[in-house]
Image (cartoon, rainbow, N blue to C red):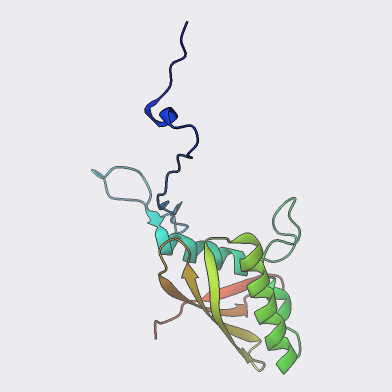
Length: 160
């Protein structure tokens, strides 16, 4: 009985590799529904928008919020009531860049700017990153202020 080989097996000395770009996708976390007559119930984010949403979720997550992953997140809520010094800004930059480097392999951080407003206990973070598979450069602006002593609130930002 003879073995059956595929067409790629005729030259077993070479490797068959598929080079394709993967499409990043995720559900839209606003959970707004599509109108009737469209396929699917909720909207989907793809490529750069999906990565941007994932980074926002990652950075806004505080430590110990994700079960079985106590170090997950940027833990920026803990920084709201710290004294606003130059070291505080550097600590925020370090936390954000480490979280993205460790938990979001689809993005490469290019620049992080931090602005602290100590009078209002708010932090503004401007994050510029590149999506790995498409080389698209995106900017994420986060304004974080406490809505209660336990949970930070994200304020809407206007594009610059």
